[in-house]
Image (cartoon, rainbow, N blue to C red; front, side):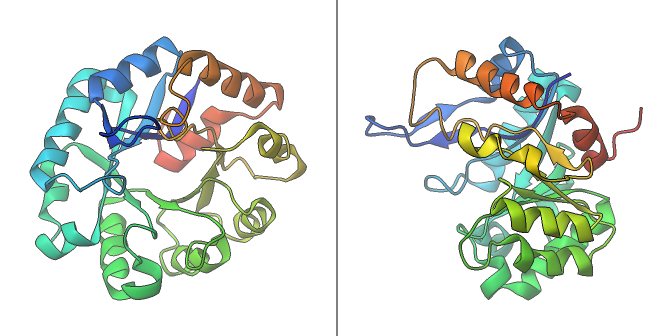
Length: 250
């Protein structure tokens, strides 16, 4: 079973094109089907181009659920603009979302808006929703920095996405039972190092599509299959972490 924990839909800039390309729900769901993906987590791409309206994002989520049904778990990428426009987060009541996506480079929640971040995480707690944080080596995004939120909200499941820096991420996972990670947008040479660490069943497969497709527009399906083959050769069980993160019961 292949479960992809990190997919996007929406407008994304592509190398060599003046205008961003629209990766529609139908296109995304079709690609996942052709690549043998059984279930996937998908959010918008609101940080990549001028943001869509809240109503547009809800329509996009509705279309994905209509096409993919229970194969798709749609996360709401909450931006600072969205929270300022709707402080009560009433857009989360639309019935199509199953989690929350946050990106520190788009809105500096951790560094500049910690009270608002606490409010968003409290909403996730009340709904029993998982949260996906973009994680990396920049200030405010490192696993050890974001771990304080996992400690403050111990019953919320967090995906510190991209598994970087890898050694630091492994240390955080070892000490925080509610922290997961994914291998999205990970080059082969880094992916080969995943087996050096104990991920305690909380490492998830991910691709970050369409991020790398936008920079290498041809042969997506073949590249995706190579990515999954590397994952399987390492003997990693992608289904276990995915289902634990989403609290999917057998």
